[in-house]
Image (cartoon, rainbow, N blue to C red; front, side):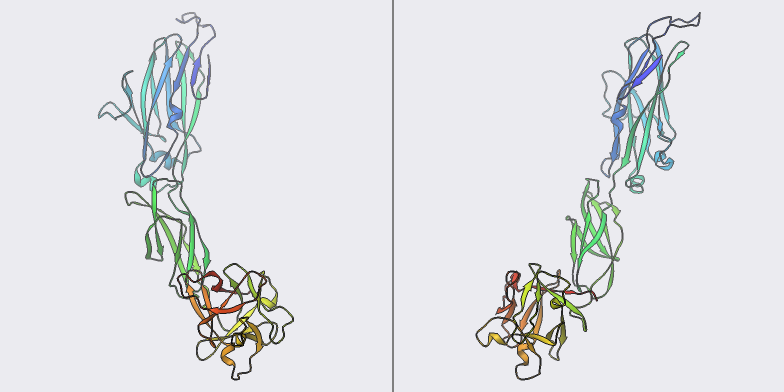
Length: 410
């Protein structure tokens, strides 16, 4: 007697009996099953059970069978114990559409359960097998996997086959948002992103800053928290929610500290355009030298320090010398922003600029001249001069009048 099987398990006897009183002296015992592989499933918050038909068939001489359901030795015992296995026999014309109130057997994958009987040649036995897990148990085991096994053995009089074993995997879908991370931050905002969980029953997310809910109907996997304090630590957690408003699972807790308020004293910055270029004061840094944009680099000519005055405006110092930004050319019929020497003279307003916040989520500012208050610095293509142009007052501000101050590492 031999066994074979992958999707179908069979016990086949092909040798002659050697016991003198054996009633089966020749022939073949073929016991097979179908359906066990269909029990492989992923439990979700809206699908906590699965029911499949397992059929045991005899294609040979009269024989008995034993079909044992249980868990593989490598499976976490507590998880296997949490999954209920329920079986009941049905007639050839019945289906597994409903669970009867009587006549069922119940166990767990950990404890196991045996289906057995005798079959005439050509006969079959039909069993409904239902496995289920409670919502509470699934909620405590997101992403947990177990391996269930089926051992099939056939017998004909004094003949017993070897055991054929089939394995399937059952698991609980991971309902937790994954890899919560800060993708961008400023002095007053933090932009977050996370990966959606495997469980397709998740319909939205709740986002908490500490114990404060900042979004309860978030459907996207990104969020920007604004209006924050500069240089302050915040903690974030994202919860998944299903269509019945059940909170399912939590993400990792993310700690993020906002940037220092810009511009900070005695700090060097890159002044970055919306297109990603940097303002540069490359040599020769002489009187009247025009400021231009270039590819951002570690060159000191792209570093500037903002020095506040009593009115809340700033002079902007080039790192490579004592020269400052100057907008005086506008009054002289040119729109270029140049370098000059800060001497505190009558032209001081031409060397002072106000920073007007235009996008709290990115930290972008509009750089407005103090000498001609309705004119703002404007960028062009990389390599072209910075100019003073009428300030855009639309919402959102045009990109070429948006600049971001990025702190340069010491």
